[in-house]
Length: 133
Image (cartoon, rainbow, N blue to C red; front, side, top):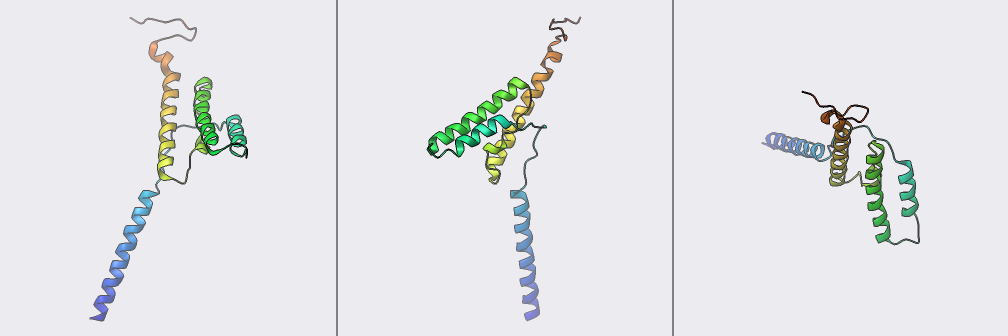
């Protein structure tokens, strides 16, 4: 009888361990990120200076982070390059990483569409609209 209970205990331990490992793997799975990115050195340095300034309060630092996010997105549009703004997100938090992956994917999609818009509209390289019969 004791051998049966020992087998049951081992089986239940194994079952519990396998469920916990499966859950951990699913919860920690990182979302695949779209596109190749360029790191925005200028924006990062400005953001770091603001974050490490002891004269600023928490609200001003949060405003700086939000401004840096939109500046990086704007610079991406202007230059036509996907900027990496992962330093603005907490990469250890699963939800924050998903939000970052969404924003990066959306920006990648929009930039690729913007690059191809001339081909879709039939605009020649000289800037003259070509009509096809």
